[in-house]
Length: 150
Length: 305
Image 1 (cartoon, rainbow over the protein chains, first blue to last red):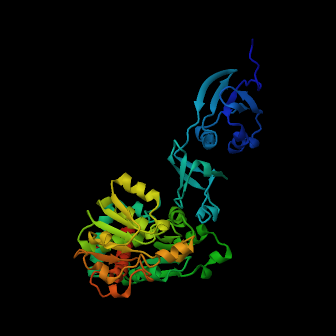
Image 2: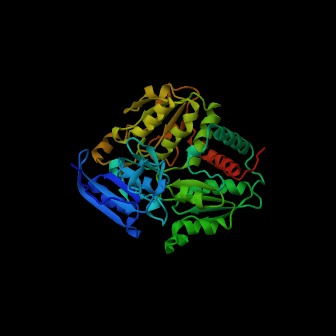
Image 3: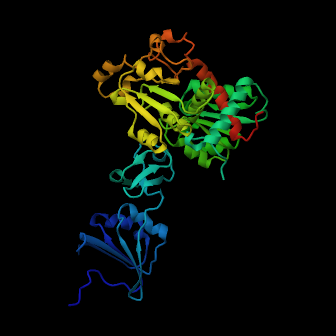
């Protein structure tokens, strides 16, 4: 029996699969999808054998740069990225947590300069496995569960 | 690329520290030189700190440099809502070097990234105060003749004590051994213990301040135990007199022992220690001027013979 697709197929573009349900709309915002005029299909609370439920985002005619797509590694580290051309998956990618995270995370230290000056935040990823960040400016360390997105 | 600044003692390698201490020794022999003639330094003290500011300003004055700046944010345009960036961009138009103290953590790193002239961090909130560490290292080097393989006992507030944290970092290049003496509430944080582990630095922890921790030490570094650091005031009452150094506690200490303190002292060193030749905290404060002269000249690329 043919498996029914839960979200319409893409001719050309990027399908972001296996997004944790609670992270779908954060991914939309981190990738600034609301600013695109491309055709976008968002599916959420879909059945997943691996995850229970999951989200999928398909963006027509859009191929993200690595630095763009790695922005989502903090909130959705296990997503699959399928690059689709002519209805075929031509490349599969994993997101990678970068060494440095700029402008995405808020520093939890109220006395940090980044919370008091119009400037970009900047963090060093000091532990990729457990996702621990250190503020480049005030040097405060932030564990995964303490991360607040801007 | 911006010129190198001093924001964090970790910005300096072992070689940098040794070179700057050598320069500080030359300034101690003769602190009055014409090396900064024709140059202007800014002291931007967004948060008042008379001791540090006077030390820096004396350092510059004795080298014939000129100083502009302010000693309190109330007299700067930050009260009008000017951003730190704009203040730094404006001041860096006028001067060759910026010395800055600010209550916000990370402000010095940010200033060093936007400023076209070198920035010296004279304290950014509770984060870093690297010239304090340089003067501590200079004093240890001066009194012991070396920085290598020393036994250092640090006493008091090891949880919040910025000077202690930076001292551990600065000495980490020189194979030290530490005794950490502190009440439980103010014990040395885990991150500094794991830092010691990662560098192969030996340490032991004590909650009582006894002769045992002092007698094998080369340096006894005292810090203030502040009442406002305690969540439980009963706890403070219990420990407030425990971490106080009295002269008789030094009777079996090593000949070369020196007692240091970043100052201001309140009660943690009793007055009877002051006349003991092992007390060195006032000379230590004086050394701040030479260490700062050395840091300033190093950042400006001025050779000191």
